[in-house]
Length: 613
Image (cartoon, rainbow, N blue to C red; front, side):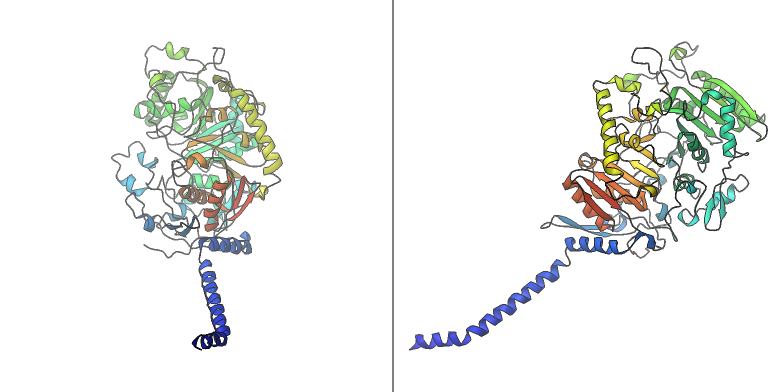
């Protein structure tokens, strides 16, 4: 009887029980969906969708914020701009980006603006405060945009005019207003082609040099030039018409922004100073070095600055010096000239031409470096001495200036150094220095063919890149310069970077008539924010991430690339997925193609962070 009653009761309550269970199941499902919308995966997807709905041309204006001094003792989550947590179950990171803060935030260069390290310097006599002093750890904050920032003026119009709001530094406009360096005209900064030594204009100055000394033969014999103390880089900018590749170089000086002007104009340039350390270039690299009133005391510190030029100048190369000691007779200038004569004779440079341009009222002297070490050996005094190659580092990265002369190279047959073949044959001819190592010539040939095919078949047509908007390009691990060689016919230029952890191929790059520099990608690069249209790398990150955090490298890439610019990465899929996650968190649009290429485009997004002073 009791059992029968229980069965009837169960039958009577069966339907309500199932209904309750169904409601519970719906409730649990709702909770799970709600939580999933807060996951990093959902956030990354939503960012990508939101970015695609907001075109780059909308150009939102981001107000300027402030950057506090960054020191190695700072709290990373507060001063370095990022709180990141990892979801162990999903294996992805959730980033909370912050803007950099402080008066220099918009133009912040971590390794040149480390105020705490600069304050601690014992001396500034030799420009130590303009050298690299990188914060540790590297900052992870994002650079704000200047008020009113716009997409840059396209090349070639940008050589002559840029948006003032993109580089809002009026000091040079006032300081050099009588010398036609730069003029403000409405919303633009205009570059008339003048300069302290270019009183008849930079074009006439360039033509006068070749008329004075025809052996220069712009764009054929002379292809790669270093312009020291370049001003606004008009010399290098107008030499582009002659097929000359000029690296414009100057230190970072507050409010003058010479290199920032140069890069905004689309002219090759880098920040550096001849202080206590070598420039980040190989020995015997440049065909010519130029200095027009560059304010470097060449005979200072026992002549080390001029010996640094001697190190990086190719045997048989020229140094063009246009400065008042060359043509004025006051006591100060005569003293400087006398010291220069003694120093150049000691390092075996000969004067091949000294002239005065009457119409411009300026003069110059052209020195030539010897092609063999015989002069060094026949000097009456061995001062400066020859460097001991056995005890001398081959690297110029964070290396002290030499106080000795580097012995000159010889050809593979043991004869005196041979100048590269004229441009453009020079680009694809096998450099003499290539034959110094076994199998390098075969590797060089294969590398050249590989990049020619990849650029033609994939990069220029198969990827979502608007190449007509690309002017300033950086190859983050350039190898032999094959990528730059393959893209040489386009109206752009390439900064070929050879990482210090990779084989040293930079001398080969210069021998080909291209330009480049050494760098360690675990540190910040010597350039202003928003200065490159495209960063390229090929299987860089595998070795790099063994030494430093990939997030810090991506933050540096975000700092360097202009809004509207691109990152083009060839790498393994696990690495591309990692990069994609970080770039999407920065609101970049990201495409993965052919399971080996990542193309990401930067927008105008910046985190809306309140200013903390």
